[in-house]
Image 1 (cartoon, rainbow, N blue to C red):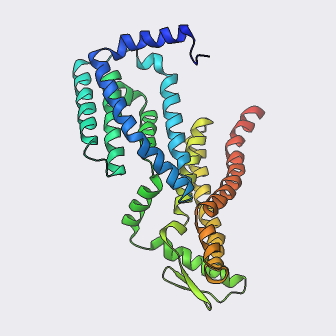
Image 2 (cartoon, one colour):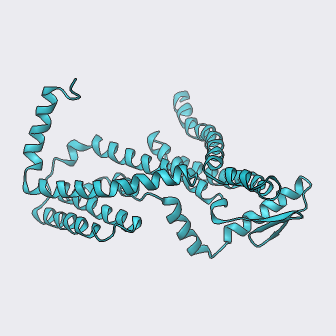
Length: 307
């Protein structure tokens, strides 16, 4: 049985004949080919960060992509009402062509590929709808661009360490972890970003600071706030609560990893430090934060209903 009906196939052929088989359609096709070249890299990094590194930033990529596309699609009638100027179309075509050609020389760098695909996407939007689409829908366009970069945890960590210096948050988390261990009767000492017990010590690395989870929580709060049409004050409140919760819950994780490293053996440490352990903690954090988030966001709806 055919996936598409005969009428749907005819409609697709009409659209292809009207738009793709034109001079502008050539550049749209070129942009699509560039995106397909980058797609395996994007999918592989999302898979690796989720199932190997145990991160949850895939929620941001898929959320940004969904929100950006749906919001632009919702306003498609107004976006397509005013065609782009000839200069806008020419510049957009140049961006697409330069991006597609440059992509061939950047296949060894995922970050460069992502940046180039952003240029290609910008060229497609600019040549198809003109500058007005960026003026009228800046947030939707920004979310589309953000969805292209596959590892926001890595980039945000790099920027954070550049601004704060090496081991800033690592030292804080080591100190908090050792203090928490002392509360349960352990003889723990924080030395820089090391936690030392009588039987051994453990290093608090950049992946164990809770920063990645806090970053994911910020994006999750932002996306859900937009989806539920919340005011910015409530979104900011949810973001702040989420960051605090992620950093606070990271302390028990550091304690568990310390016990696993010092007392329980390498296999136990690898499990809790790896993808499965990371996803378990992510699941606990997101579950707790979801109910807090609903209390913050639904409060607005209950007040409106009562009024």
